[in-house]
Length: 350
Image 1 (cartoon, helix red, strand yellow):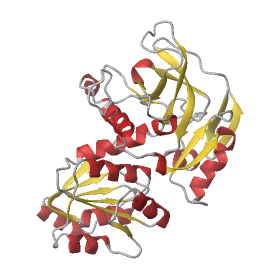
Image 2 (cartoon, one colour; image 1 turned 60 degrees about the vertical axis):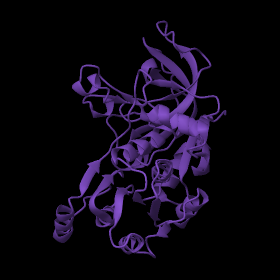
Image 3 (spheres, rainbow, N blue to C red; image 1 turned 90 degrees about the vertical axis):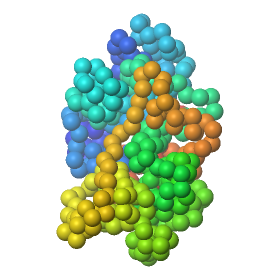
Image 4 (cartoon, rainbow, N blue to C red; image 1 turned 45 degrees about the vertical axis):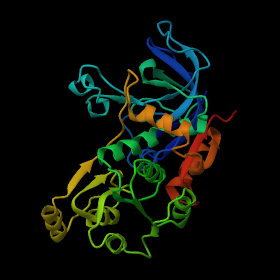
């Protein structure tokens, strides 16, 4: 099969590799699309991953092409998306269904081979069948959309809340849609790239600001009578947005850390004092909630929202790239040589 294989830092190769073999309790998924996460760029070009060679890609959906002999719940032809975290049952967090909080887990696309390929092997318990009305492109974005939903749920959004998002990558734009559906009254969106701001406007948002031209704290205070936002989300992972999100929170408000940090952040003493006096909650969020037993988890809620039209994901897709051009697409994202939001890779024959 074809694959984009990471052999070392900045050592990506498009090549033919053996089709992965089934193991008990697994299926082989033929990839429809695999999204490129922002984390795939440093993983490929600067930080590396856990071992080499590795096939990256953890945001994917496809069609079951083969099942192990002990699998009965899925059949060839089923359309599925895959929760990429492979947990161990003997961890206390797993006993509570909090798989993302476990230790010693495996992960498709970073610790084990993932979706930058024609086929991937996945445990049957990590699969979810797709609703008929959800396209394969949309299904490949279930993972980041579930991450955005998890952050919104962590923030305990209430009807009428004023919120602000700093950073309008795919997850930031998905988060804005979740907050709107949860009843946030005003949603302030900040970014530096006009293309992302315009996309936010196309999705129906009006409080959209270029951070180069508008001071976010002044904008939010002017709109809230000096009180600030009930909840702010840092979704870019850089120091300026972290500081802006902290400065914009009202008394007893909440700030959610969502973006992967790209460097250290130093907080001024005066800001720390303000956060203490205002009793601001600082909330971390990572990954998403998934249930083996089909409960109301982030993944199933996301698929239902896509199917109902509550969540619009297709406008976020700017590139659909065959695997034989995948390395160039990753380099484009690294260099930011053209505008992009969500980049999807797919087998070259599709």
